[in-house]
Length: 149
Image (cartoon, rainbow, N blue to C red):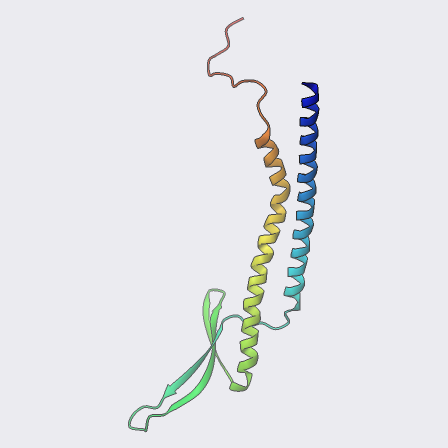
């Protein structure tokens, strides 16, 4: 019986060692990922919120049918209000890149929040698993009152 208890104890210790070691590696990987995300966000120098659209206008009768344009318009929302700004054709390519940079920044920021949340919950997961894995040593007491002494 003691021999069996010794193996069980060693098994538990090995499990805990691997669990804690795995948690440490996971934490290191998450911290590294978060730092990488910050560096990628920091590398974005120009950005514009919104979306760039290309608009064309048709001439009205009695003039002959013709299409004029393109006219570039940057549209979006800022502080809950809609904005619209006409963009000169020579600046349209740069504004389109700036809008794409904004989308990339938003994606990176969402990933940063997700990784930070995972890092925050790591220590709590270890404590929660301890709470849930412990067994009661005594049977549950019934709702009856103890006998008077």
